[in-house]
Length: 149
Image (spheres, rainbow, N blue to C red):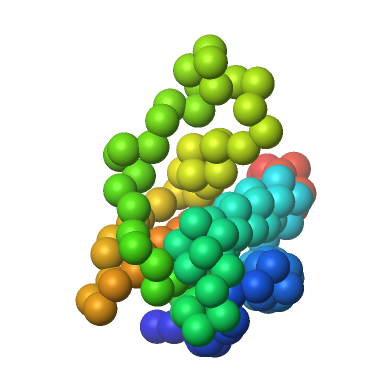
């Protein structure tokens, strides 16, 4: 059962990146995410959307971003798709290689994978790339001592 689904089609701009990040955080908060988990969702959404605008659509105004955010009883899911040339994450250089550690960029996909429970990439029919990020909803125990008998 889907409790909430939001879909948007946006222009390829950095303003769209900020909008998607804010929307994802708002939806995740409503779903119950807090603290570090919320920060992880925010970061992964920002990095993935930025990659779609910068590397996928290359800031081309005629190319769009396709966003879908869903919350079910057990997961938060955001899909970010572009109309670019596509990429294979397996071919990305190792961001932890000594020669890459001092670079200012190149760790977004790596960290997004680490921060989210699931990270899926697929080629879109008609061109472009779709990235699906999933964070599982876990039972939040706010006062562990309240469960003791």
